Image (cartoon, rainbow, N blue to C red; front, side):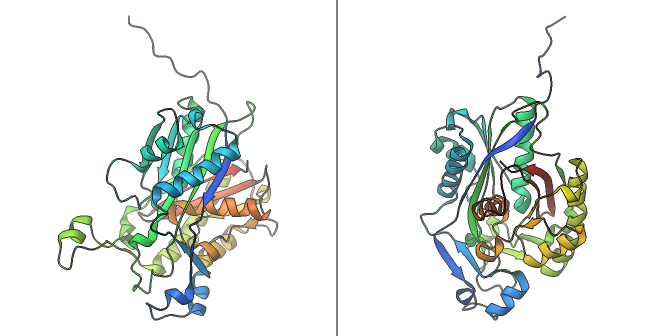
Length: 338
């Protein structure tokens, strides 16, 4: 009989050790947006809650923004790049089919040949990556995992499309996942995730790259399109159910939550979810969208970083995070703030 395969004896607890973010230097006001669409500052604020958004300059790339955010997260965690065993990058705006952005980022950070890959899960991407990273640490596949959400959505935004021109933005956020300090210190709850492909047309890239490059009217960048009303209804109510499932899976009650950090899609969606969940008044709610816009996979770590910066979040707080978007895909979990 041949030898047996060894696996870790038991699963380890995991936690987020550090968080970092990068916000592009260019601030785009609603007044600038409405130069190209039939709208107003008041309409945009009322419809979405957005006052300003950040768009990257030519020098602020998916790679450079990720490296900057990751460097801050590593410093916050007290983890050296060579201690990172895997780099996971959630993005839909890295414009190379291959190699993955994660490979370049791992190299530029100075990791010791860390495993590296990208995932495409739209606005749920960071939560997907966090779950994968947690499972890697829990099983012993990696000691530390760097999870990055990054987007340059301004590249794929049609500035003349009244339904999307005011929404999308750019930025990067990162988290370092590592083992808990003790056997009973769980810092990342079970993920609740899924997809509903019958509604994939509600948020999508308008045309495939081949059509954009070689079709009638090309070459051009493909653009994102969205059917806002059904997306609003789905996100406001179906995602409240998924959020409650994440709370239940973590074995806590809603009264034990300190923070609610949903994907920064739309302020009205955030408010509708909070009402559906019947969040206690003491729970601080992330509203980073007002000054950052919708940054898809980057929005949750960006919002977490802002709450830490403003003092709305403190170490040890319990936060419910949930991402949702194109696909339609979703993922959420309860985490403890590092």
